[in-house]
Image 1 (cartoon, protein in one colour):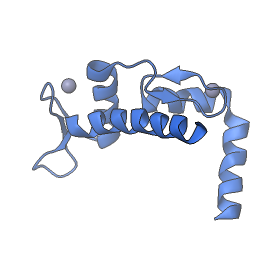
Image 2 (cartoon, helix red, strand yellow):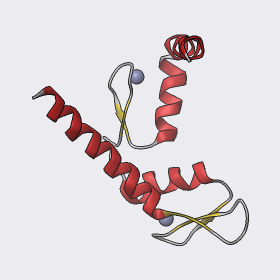
Image 3 (tube, helix red, strand yellow):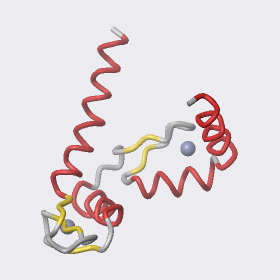
Image 4 (cartoon, protein in one colour):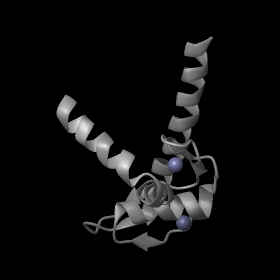
Length: 101
Ligand SMILES: [Zn+2]
Ligand SMILES: [Zn+2]
């Protein structure tokens, strides 16, 4: 049962990522990315991902904070949330990762 639940969660997560990456397109100009949905060009990939997540997908449950399970609609919002509310845990986590890898 638990494995099935985990698998479902993974599919939902991947589905969001799949939607994002199907809308974020590389252009012929190096370093310039384009939104396939509305055609806007942005000068970095993370900005384009943020644009797609906020403007087009607009799913308030797209990303879940791993520390308090709050749900946010973009990677950017998750990053802001993590640095604002979980600075210490986040840093510890990073150190832990460096030690174990
Ligand atoms: Zn767009
Ligand atoms: Zn949190």
